[in-house]
Length: 232
Image (tube, rainbow, N blue to C red; front, side, top):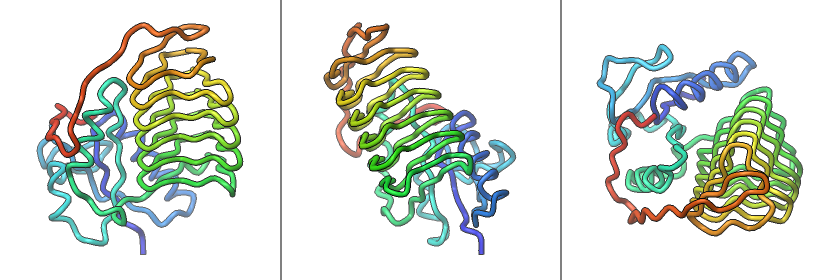
């Protein structure tokens, strides 16, 4: 019997995740999309051809056999999105991890709950991927690298061997994180950045070599009711 999946998210990342599920099912995975939960759209509307079932809190009304996937990572809003998820109180065993059938994930990689690995991603040996991390199309994660919980790796970005993304860190499209270097919690490396030094938490770096351009300070208490408009 197919595993029924409900996607938390909107028409952007939600559609990307939905298409990955469809591709995985076509390749033989026992997965079926039930619909979406979204704070900014009404029941009766649809995303990628699948119905909106309610708001995020409505997960409690769904059958206990339905699994969930998180598609609400948003660069620049990661602290709020993490707080939103944690405030929902969803048990770990309800979350599923998803990988596109074209992804290549080493047998020794450790992949956390709720994570998403998109098309043509390469995950090298002994990598650790945390819960709710998102690796977008074409990403390359070097051996022994760590992608922390809620971290986001943009399309075609690269983590070299032993590099590390901490909680909620975002490595932008085509960016590179040098071996043994770390992007701190909720830090952001912009598009095409070449990160050659450790980046402190909440810092934003850009350029080649990457330089700090600002610091984001947006403290969010665990369980805070941040309400993103559209949850895209």
